[in-house]
Amino acid sequence: MTEILNRLLEQKSLSFHEAKALLTDIATNKFSPFQIAALAGIYNMRSPDLQEIRGFREALLEICIHVDLSDFNAIDIVGTGGDGKNTFNISTLACFIVAGAGEKVIKHGNYGVSSVTGSSNLLESLGYVFTHEKEHLQRQVEKAGICFLHDPLFHPSLKNVASVRRGIGTRTFFNMLGPLLNPGEPKHHFLGVNHLELARLYHYLYQSENKNYAIVHSLDGYDEISLTGPFKCYEPKGEHLYSPEGLGRVKISHAAIAGGKNNDENKRIFLDILSGKGSVAQNEVALTNAAFALSLINQKPFKESYLRAKESLESQRAKESLDKLLSI
Image 1 (cartoon, rainbow, N blue to C red):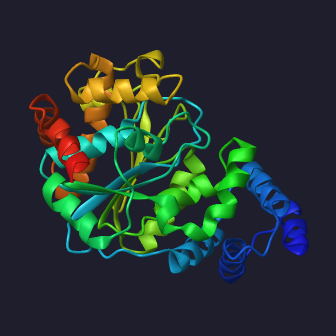
Image 2 (image 1 turned 45 degrees about the horizontal axis):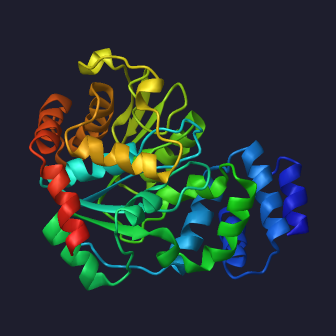
């Protein structure tokens, strides 16, 4: 590890095979927490390059517990986190709106590290019981349209890394890898990324793998479509710059989509929006993200997908999807 740290400090990159071996060694507890923290610190100062991300990702996907949910034409809607914006749980809300619209979602997530409430914190507070049993997850997707894959259950080898990440308290390169590590391997990927350079790297990675994906980054720093300003979207056919006005939406303020100060507040915001008590701004952000995900699955225009998302939320079918998930 000392040699690798010195090389990285000299602004040199690792090859694909070196990166893969490094993450394999981390996952098998060959390095101390101090060494892992040093590595995270270096990658906080400069992002991994494409070959490093490929190597890191392949190592972790080989080691993880896989669950075969390939029978479903499903999507994952997930962000890197670490944008420091403290929004409410936009991507998780979008998941239930998409499920309420009749599509299938295989959501992958974790506890919040650099944010107040991660998707795992939220669902756990609602009474969801994490599982890695294939039959149970299949039943959830069939009946509720959605299942949730709690990252630590599927990546137990990274347990030692979790304590390091909590100790650091800011985003690390593990945030960058998280959205790439869904063990259910859904067919569609709607990813939010916290900075533009990483969005491009994800784009190059997925282009080479012939994936169906959309990667979004709001230019004012959000790892989702925030409607607070323009955002970039990378898809197999190229990149596009969108504005709220160009989508027929209204630009909103940062304060309008702020999250709560703790898990209880974020749980209340989440349930309020699903129950039809959300503000116009909260609804618009959740619906816009859900509409992009629906467009990705069905290759339909945004306007048509937005109307599907709106109907899912206003008819309470999105809320029914949550209720069914919690009852299974």
